[in-house]
Length: 304
Picture 1 (cartoon, rainbow, N blue to C red):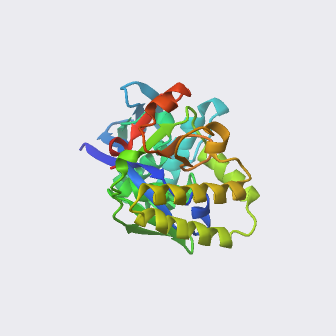
Picture 2: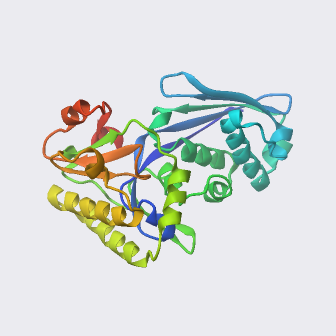
């Protein structure tokens, strides 16, 4: 019997990095996401095919049940295959029936966003697999990729969320976030994919006493959620950038790339790649296009 699942993509608006240490983070699910289609097959194999948003195949492989059970490792040229085996092996540990009670599968994944955008190719996959096998998505993430899990919360929810790790367990609160000034907010892709794993490792290497920072970020997040004026919203996000710049010992993205921008620019998620958010009175599309950044998406087109 054919089964189909879908998960939302994500953007982390506040709390990047420090969400790992218990800070409250504002995260928004996107209108973009990923589907997973499962169909029965034969030969104790999984025939896997992954489509990008434009219909092109970006990954294809065949995995034997045995390679999943034993977590077989392939050479470095098969990095994606190894990662997939890692996820499916952990899923097998959590629910062995999907292999023991099947003869095989044909599995298809389809993104509705370009995979290089960093909106959650991995998190949407993990959440879809967890839905399929009726296992805990957060546990599957922990045993495979790691990370705070806010992206899974976005995958599972159709509204803005306040996300926090309490005693290393996710606490998810659906909230209303619908600013009147949405037309002043745009998302810009920085033309390069940032590795979350590497970014997190760099953060953990730099952090010292983080309690004070968490308190500051929590206050900023509260202000961002409740802001009724674009100026208040932008100022809070600017404070967030300054605080995290100090922690990470990095320039803010506005200092590094957009010093002449008439507005405020906020990094989203891992600093140095993927998307940033711009708040400005005027439509900033022409400004960013001239700077060499052609992908500028209005709030209403990006956020669910």
